Length: 334
Image (cartoon, rainbow, N blue to C red; front, side, top):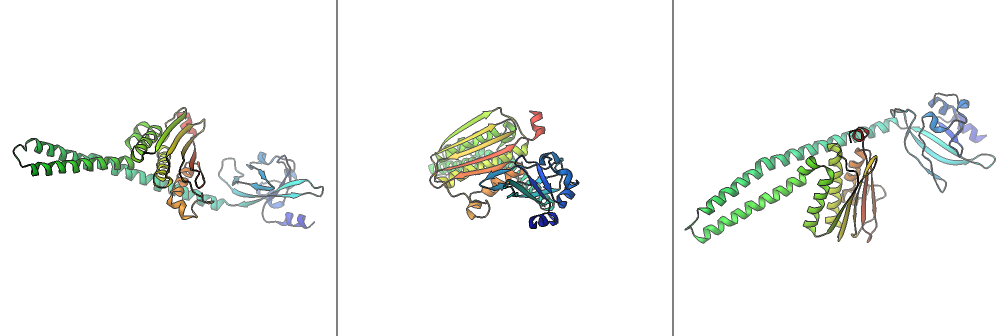
């Protein structure tokens, strides 16, 4: 009777489900939310009324996700809290309390949109700087090198000290061109726009192994697809950040990079045999997460509706895995 009183007068919507995910009962607040008489909801599958429920029973606790009662995914958005209660006969019943989080959800979506805008602006600025360095600065240095070569060709009869200084100046200019080319590739590799994410990550791994001496292996599976520029840049940046971590923190001897084009998503894996680390329970709380760039990788993956998984233990290496769904319009175009 006490439970019934709390159930009926609770201002929060409450649903009771049986083991088959059918509604046993709904309180008045639940009926109001679903625009139905509570009695008419009894026996109806929860999924049939627009509530998407994913129940995972693990030792009597339940994982849940934000759900929506609107089939168009426009809200209201609800955060379900699951618990297990028993009826007078001892049968287990799933109790779902629904909390309206529409404002919070919209705020989070707004933050994601803003983050996407900032990242897009950063990439456009990187592309502009890389283009200007290539078209102006590097070309000017290349012209300087040709002029130095021309002077050198006409330096017969000059002192050896003069020609040595000329050769040194030529080497300095040549090194500056090489450094700037490497810098522009890091800013925005032309191969990314021309040939796509697979070729660019393969090239990234080749540069990484040449620079560090770490043995690298690249594996491609599935049918390669070209994606939107933003998606390809996002995947490339995550791979770049993961390899940067391997270079500066992992002390690894081997690293494997794989890209798997599946039917509806892309899976990127970067696995090393380095020293590993303790993964923060919540990325962003520990300073190590920021130092290793985990926050940035997670934000990039979430912008595209994907998810990031980090698996690591001290002495056991690290695996960085991202799952990026392929938008339906891009599936249709491929």
